[in-house]
Length: 129
Length: 129
DNA sequence: CTTGACCTTCCCCTATGGGGGAAGGTACAG
DNA sequence: CTGTACCTTCCCCCATAGGGGAAGGTCAAG
Image (cartoon, rainbow over all chains, first blue to last red; front, side, top):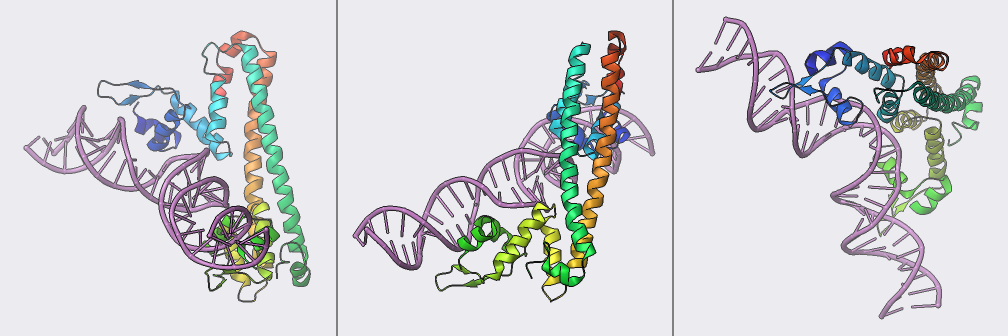
């Protein structure tokens, strides 16, 4: 399958596919005699995983690290397990960071939502008045 | 007061102050005969508000909107509240997605940790990744 | 008079994640 | 033979949020 159909099947753009290849999230694909990229059907799944990871807030470099876990091809279980554990810890840390940001924001929100304008004006958010 | 002392008093850089002016978060300040920006003391409060808003996860354009509401003399609280609520909802959604991804990965990790190498090599991980 | 600490505008730089479009090759249909 | 719909590489562009530093003006002190 060519880049257009692989991209469409995964819900990403062809630009994005080339970009992911350049960034090391996709291996260099086979090329047809005319230079066209030829993808195996399972590339669609990989692209879909990337798309979902991006939607979840993972960066391209994080996804590169995650994908690198399985790519040695002969991925031995201990290695996969350890790398996966590392990624889990990293994800947990990121979730914790986001949650902290969220809680700080919730605090500010509650302060503003609970107050009458006077309180608000006197409060943290509106005190510049 | 000049830009350096206003910036220092608010805990931001002079670069950031000029940037905020350019982005419409600060009105064009008075200028001294030599061209220096002259700030009224209350600009420090405005800068501090911007700094806290940024730290709370609001974007420069959100802060521009909030400040634009305030400037005619309106209480910005409803807008601050709405902007914070929007950010909060977006953050909650992102945390949920990331958590789902994390749980899927934890499943894979458990399978690898518990499973035989055949399962691993057979693509349990690969099918997820 | 010179030094140092300010200030000004200007442009380039970072990293992120691609999008737009040019210039050109290829494949198939009418 | 030409239109179109692909594909290729290439470079420039956007927003985000400024940082770095050049080249130059200004001001008070030693």
